[in-house]
Length: 75
View (cartoon, rainbow, N blue to C red):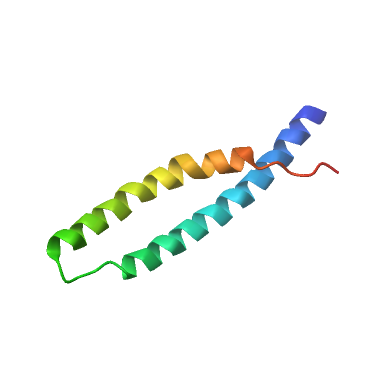
């Protein structure tokens, strides 16, 4: 019984960490997308490709790892 409660509490905190990380990454990518130079076509599409290639990697791989590494104070 105690083990399942501990896992539930840990999952609850990890969801909060994941939401905060995801929102901050999405906001950062939105700001970075606005800063992409539009004067050169190759540079524009290169930057857009990099933004859209890195975003799923961060959302599906990096955020769960960060949430897993966060340790919460036990009461």
